[in-house]
Length: 283
Image (cartoon, rainbow, N blue to C red; front, side, top):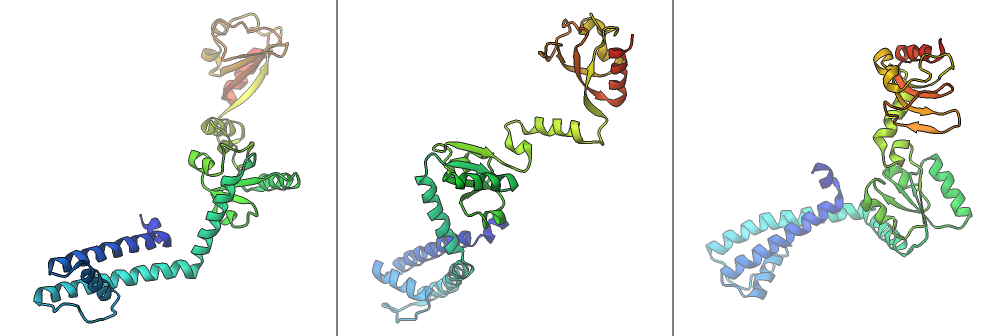
């Protein structure tokens, strides 16, 4: 909530909403004191703006008390709204808003363009190539600082959010280029990619992926996965088997036979894989 209130445009909207409510309440209050509709609006606006014109009606004690409250609330609200508008104008937010609106209209008119997800090193090189090929480009990035330096149409947001891609014109685009810094962000299965990346590259973990060739003299040769009891004897897990002809048996079942020349794609700790390696190569 606090971050939203720091947005000057939110402050302007809040201020204008409260100011409209104060004017409405002041108008209704003066109507109840016997003012006409026009006189009620006139009296309310002149009170809030502290213009100080003479009231079109004489004020009794009740209407004077109401006017005092209206001054305190209305003037404070008007000052708050004015300061919010002034902040937008001074800090250039209005200029940014106009630029974004113009950019949104430009994107809405695009068709057959290329959406580049991520303004990193790869994204810059792809954009430069596409520019030389005279292709229209829309860049999507969630870093507001990087967006300021992009010389192309851009959209701020998370590329995994459908609304962000719709804003970039994904329905009319010819191609989408995933050029994010992390591979997991580029795919539809980020947790799987993170897991594989950790298994392959994180030296702090005990388990790893390994490929182990089965020799003709191995006690595993000619046995099924069930009869070989690899899991029970070594603790390692066989994820896939690559046959000598290059074919893969993925997610092998216990009845699959291990043959000489096979390569066992396995996961386990260094000790577990070492034990399996000895089974695969030793007589």
